Length: 126
Image 1 (tube, rainbow, N blue to C red):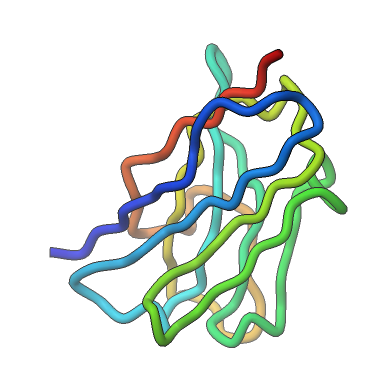
Image 2 (image 1 turned 120 degrees about the vertical axis):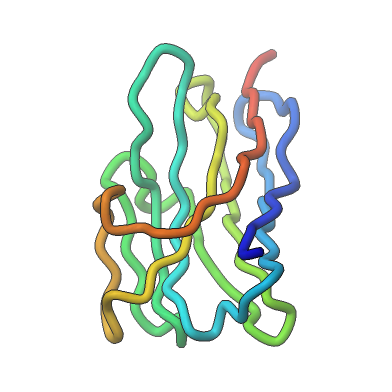
């Protein structure tokens, strides 16, 4: 069974940092682009970032550009999302996802992503 397990979420003060992890089981991530999405309370899920298989192409939502960094370690079957300078608007459940529609780019459209994790909660509060 193909699945992701996200971890690394928690409660953090504004201005703090977190590094989220997303580890796949049942499949090899080196055949898939990896994306991160989030859903804040009462809001629609939104795309945050994605990276191609090689990691050479990355894409970020405007709202997180410069504060979020996506990376991946295919040997560990794991992707990461480094989040810096957190603010309360970053409070959300963060999900990772995989798709293999594209080779040299990845697209931040939720409908294109095939496999999803269960999410990890990030809460930013003083």
